[in-house]
Amino acid sequence: MTALPLYRSPDELRAALAPLRARGDLGFVPTMGALHEGHLSLIRASAAQSETTVVSVFVNPTQFGPSEDFDAYPRMLQDDIAAAQSAGADVIFAPDKAGIYPEPYRTYIEVEGITGTLCGRSREGHFRGVATVVWKLLQIVDPDRAFFGAKDAQQVRVIRQMVRDLLGRWEIVACPTVREADGLAMSSRNAYLSKKERARAPAIQEALGDAIARIEKGERHAGRIRVGIMERIEAASLRPDYVDVVSLDDLAPVHETQGDILIAVAAFAGATRLIDNVCIHIGDQVEERLP
Ligand code: AMP
Image 1 (cartoon, protein in one colour):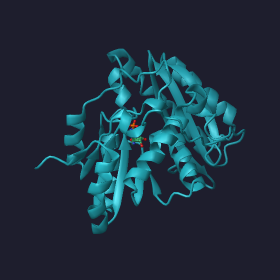
Image 2: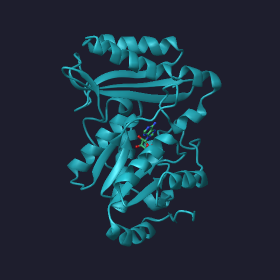
Image 3: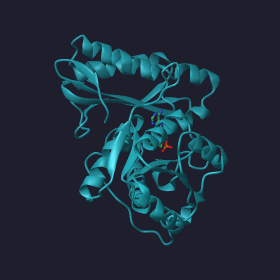
């Protein structure tokens, strides 16, 4: 296999994509690298639906808070290129910071109303950074559709809102969360976990599974569902950052679980912050759905 073409600057990438776009649909998978099966599932979904799949690898500085892990975030571009290629990627875009944020840099995108809750509450400025970089990447790649993981359900909602509000024409596709055999949601940050922390981490998904089981049995009280999840997580010696039961529509807390609901958790295993969630539709039956 010849190595995938790798582009470092937005202009180079735009020029390379022009003839490819004429051949058929373009799919796009934005990532921060350290690719795992979760990322690869997005690449496979794109490759199945698109003639050409572009994968970006960019550790976006503006979505990290000052005390977060930007410097420590794993970087392994050569491995990522090989993994992306095996999953069906055709082009890699790995810009440097100056290519995305030319100095002096002054413009950001702020999505209102749905970015102050959940991860937005504990990671101030996070979604401003996410929205800004995703908008830029979508502008540069200009795909027919872009693929995002349900693991970051709030991110999916924020990006959908941004694209709708700013009249973008890209289709936003959400894909299911990919998990380890014991249920832990795959994440590049799982590499930070010690053996002990790794053994405790599946409690997050187990707590969410319990919550669904209780809802299936008729529980509709969001407060009790929250407390049940919180207790299960604390019992596993994890430290909850938040446990919230919100409406999938506006991400506002609900009292009663009805309709389309997102149950979202962030919890620390040692110093590592892990997130997970379930999206469900509660009608005559309880069905999992995508954000
Ligand atoms: P990241 O590199 O963490 O910015 O993630 C890039 C994309 O991969 C985002 O759309 C994530 O939601 C998605 N992603 C990350 N982990 C998973 C997973 N376990 N399952 C599915 N998608 C994922």
